[in-house]
Length: 329
Length: 213
Ligand code: HEM
Image 1: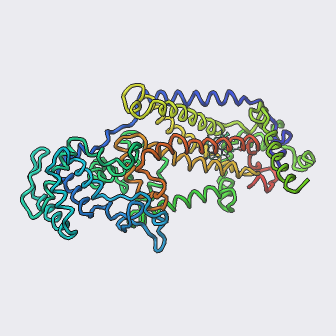
Image 2: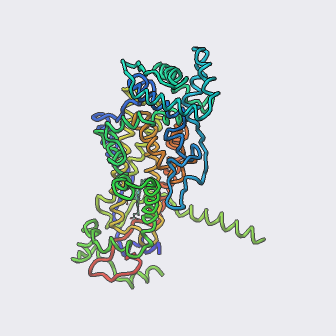
Image 3: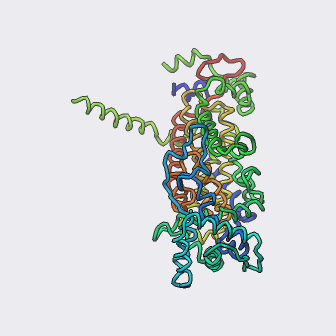
């Protein structure tokens, strides 16, 4: 078989310099890329920090923290791998692969985002200690009532710069706790207090990102039309070409059922897997593997060859099949 | 000789015999069939050229670290090389893939070459994605929180934690490139081993099943 493919009798050979080919290709790419880099640079938009949110969007910060505190945030109810909630559990009927690996990255937002940072700050502000004791000693019902009262009062708050004045309400220690947390945030200490899942390698930024995604990141992204249903990832880079090779994947999010189902991500992921399998199987799939032969675009690519064979310029005309078989044996 | 020895002897011998077919002339041919005459044959080489640029610039970025590549000057320029290298890589790879499809290049025992090509494409997408997450700017943050739902929902989020910069960065600069480079290497060895796929039969030529499929 192999001999047939490279059989010089059927396919006359011509001189070919692979090294030259490789060097030229490398140089061409390098030149294009250096010019593009010099002319356009590389995309970069300053990251969003908790400090920024705490000082420029104080009400948003306090709302997010309040929801984390009484476990009503999206993350508190998310589901695997963070906890056993069902809020973001994606399922198609009984198929929910999200639960297979279980809760591998447990996170307790009330503790990680609010209570722990505040207790770390008690040496700086001893007045925090009785507030935390009061919170810990209260029933869950009482805590929820405090937070609800606080959120209602917060919606009527007046804002002066980064200072928020919340009207008095039956909200127990909550206003003092959260205003201390906001001070920690606007001072720039909060993300350091949050991202401490490991003592030395603090690479896992889940706590701070999950705090930010509560609302602040969502708002900032919306301002730039980056949401999934708006081809988010595609115009990711603003004026730069984004990852346009994700177009088929991104396109799924624009059409039902992907755009409407709460299991849209799950469906899109498995649709892509299916497309990958189909691509892998092209050589073995009758019908699919015949498409290029039927399209005849190959005649453009090999036009010189076909011209030679069909209009008989002797040199490249292939010998008959029988010739070939005789040679191979 | 026991059966076992024969079997293992055959195994090592098969590897050795396979290796012997890769002579320098097979790897760096001085001749190609005459039908190898079209720009589309450069797409694979251009893809490879872009991959080399991407890997080389990536090594320089990794050697200098995240603060360097976020600081205007040499760092941002090198990040630009890496970024535009990736754009060129995907551009040429998609041209290459499309051309190979229209040429039916999986014919005559080349399904493995196609298979590894598709695999390289998929790996490239995942590798590039982890790169976007590693940039360390607003887009990285936004893509991290968006992608977590996709990864979690599809079932691999319990292992592939897009919020863990250590894991993502390690995957991006070591694990995924190593696998990708291995896949591309075998892809290229297979191309050399089989030789360039012959054209479909001409209209005045008798068709042979193998050439068709
Ligand atoms: C990392 C990405 C890739 C690199 C660096 C690469 C490189 C190459 C090179 C240098 C060649 C030989 C020259 C040529 O025909 O252009 C080749 C051939 C080939 N490539 Fe790729 N390729 C890549 C991805 C792909 C993909 C995504 C596919 C298809 C899905 C693919 C399918 C093929 C096939 C079928 C051949 C054999 C052509 C023949 O026998 O005539 N490759 N590749």
